[in-house]
Image (cartoon, rainbow, N blue to C red; front, side, top):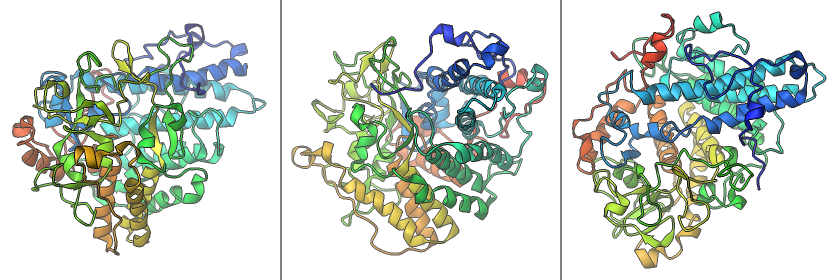
Length: 578
């Protein structure tokens, strides 16, 4: 049984929580009874450590099938995925997101994610406040503060990618009046990213190289999230009248290079097989590529274990096996096409205006079969479940196609798929993995126009790893006709050509990991890519016939109506005519 810092506390421990207001004005940390710590308790490391662990725990307990902190529910806005489910009315508010039409500031899903993430920040700040009250004789004080500031940065990071203009809770002991006076435009976009970076800089300076509890962040985790923060910050979007990228800042990109330096990641590297990152067996979790992960578990003494229920809607509905599976978050045909390769084993680099992937005739990167369940091939590599174009593999009768995501699911014939109110699994969710660090470094090099050969080499390391990631695909060529072919790029390239290849590699390496839409917004490419996707994908998925992405609006979610109404005029709605 793995040590799990995210494991939930008993009610008796939760009752010790400090009374603190959250930054979402009208909403307290609703799942936690509020109490005041006595002076004696504040000075007791046991009580303070309980608050720290409770702050970790909420990043699992607060998420939901409709508000997963993996952000899969909101990745349906990208060209990687269809919403799925039983039809457009099944989760209609997410259907509005996938077609960029009819989104309302009063939609429950827009407000729900805001509340859940600010509840997380409330717990983190409660722990920070208690830690600050401890004397310096508490030996772990600085390290625990660094952990909490890492979590605070992570919560703000998730919120900022979704809503752009957010209130920052960077003072842990605010009065009610101070909370009610918070503004979501106190900082420019660039300054907001720097607020997140400041917390992470502190964490990076203090956190140890290793942690006995795998869920606690290390110095490498702080470096990886810093690199990601500075990469977003580099693509400046500070024009208050638009979401356009007005500058790509070289100083920020150099920070990305600083925090992706391989010397910071001793002990980390690529898994020999890509699929090892998405396996539930304990021997594959917290592996060499996992820099920081949400720690789920089973048989750990809690009811149903500490399972990941946030993927409960993604399981397909296999009669007599996964009855009740809801079949959401289905890979798009456009994504499948992105894995096609030519006779030289190289990607086509343009997924538009080309024939759809045909498994009988086309080559593909092996990562296709490790990412997407495709008709004619086994589901979760289990020959007992050959996927087909029928209702088992599409609750919408083909409206959302017949593909199924594999990275989030587990073999239903194993002990790792567990039925509760929904389907759960103990499989960890990697938040920061080393492949992403490599791609961030390659992107910064390409944008700066320096070390272009190194950028291509980093991409090629991932492509070479893909070529050997066939352990689960043994016999796919003979039995199912799979034509697997992936090769490294053979030449040298200029800046634009290198950047194009890096961006393509991000898509296929991180497919269905909820990075794609945020990448497109960060690059300033969402308008062109998503509208082209709508136009070319309508033949495969009719829901896109009336879809249209509006620039300077659909890049970010609106600020929820309930939050603006409760802000006493201190919150400003995002641009776009919401």
